[in-house]
Amino acid sequence: MDVLQMGIVLVIVLFLAVIMGRYISQAFSLEGTRLDSIFGGIEKGIYKLGGISTLEMTWKQYAKALLLSNIVMFGIGYLIVRMQGFLPGNPSNIGGMDPLLSFNTISSFLTNTNLQHYSGESGLSYFSQMGVIIYLMFTTPATGLALCIAFFRGLTGKRTIGNFYVDLVRAHTRIFIPLSVIVGILLIAQGVPQTLHATVQATTIEGIQQQIARGPVAALESIKHLGTNGGGFFGVNSAHPFENPTPLTNVLEIISMFLIPASLPFAFGHMAKSRKQGWIFFSAMALMFVAFLSLAYIAESNGNPALEKIGLSQSEGSMEGKEVRFGIAQSALFTTVTTAATTGTVNNMHDTLTPLGGIVPLGLMMLNCVFGGDGVGTINILMYAILAVFLAGLMVGRTPEFLGRKIEGKEMKLIAITILVHPIIILLPTAWALVTSMGSSAISNAGFHGISQVLYEFTSSAANNGSGFEGLGDNTPFWNVSTGIVMLLGRYLSMIAMIAVAGSLLAKKPVPETLGTFKTDNSTFMVILLSTVLIVGALTFFPVIALGPIAEWLTIR
Image 1 (cartoon, one colour):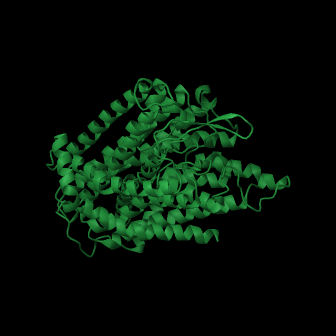
Image 2 (image 1 turned 30 degrees about the vertical axis):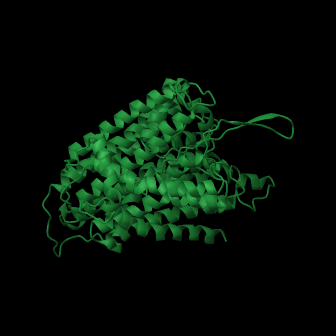
Image 3 (image 1 turned 60 degrees about the horizontal axis):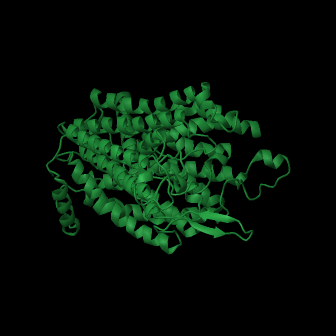
């Protein structure tokens, strides 16, 4: 039954992703489509109101517009959370946020990470939740999606990269806002709160006064998942009954956070005029996803050997840190999806996963290309595809080509930088935190699990995921600054490098296909792509995985 219920959810995702992929390709089409008659008038009004020029951009102009808009959003968000104690929309009288915590929080939500070193219901006013958190939950995935579409245009040889502001507006009007309204209404129907009233004071049956937090939860929950954001209105995120009250909302949230990442390979296939190409990339990511999901489900179903040795039954699996209303299957599926799609929302505590189960979220974030977040994950798998083409071409003596463009030294240097940056900003800070008292003092569980806690925090930050092994005491100056810097580097270095690759490929003349052209739309290429991801990506992190989860597993056997 567990396998059946997980399978049904994934089949629904696949069905919707195929439809959504075609829709996304039309929504961002440079040619006129029927969607223009629906959304064009609204979008023209936004361009006029914002003084936005719709002229086509070079890749440098596109990158500059992206960075400048994000810098402005950072400044506005930082000021609001610092001054929230004096601003309206604060019925619970929550004070301003600490400066370093503010830096971490805004860096987190600006980079689509949503790592939280604070508890939402007590750390932010309603105005901050709506004016900063929900606002950034719309703009940051829209930024990632816009970049992804620009990257697609570069690879598929469109006439231009496009215009960042046009793509940003379209991501809102044609994708995120309509979907968020639909999902938000469905969540409200299932009992998720949506109110601006203050915290409720209730008297328990013991006669004790209890403060019950509430607020505009449904509005945040919908875009939290659709935008692969992950930050919760409440500290325990989607394990809280106000955020995720029923098994139906659990499924809805899984589908929401998986929908756009799963649809982008199909959108790429449509833009490349090769649906088979889109299916190859989707299949490669799906195979890795199923492998990780199987490991998570089997590990959690088998329970904890250490508890079994002392006579505690593990027949129901390892239910520590999990909600009974979801059980092993939906917890394992949620864990795998939230880290595959780099969302970061949780319906169970990842710190209580079995050691082998803990490898799953860690491994998915380390690879950062198994669907990934809105736009970024698909860019990463395409980056590995270009690398695979380059390596295969060298091995068989063929000129490396991808979709009719030659892959040369400039592109490979940028891709090499991107591949190297990810492990560097994970492993170096992890080592630093483990050997310094500032970092190691936050570890709540000494030994191998403590290594996993620190490793998870920086991996989540670098992959812009946001989930955590929450046993780590991370609201300190050291962790707020270090993870904030890692989140910014993990987001923007790769973005700039990839848009540069797209611009470089777009400027090249297409190469006609010959008998010597290496095909990238067949199963042979899919095997090469998977091998490249596993050899280049996975083996980089294997030693530190051996020091953490694997070593911990061996000690409890």
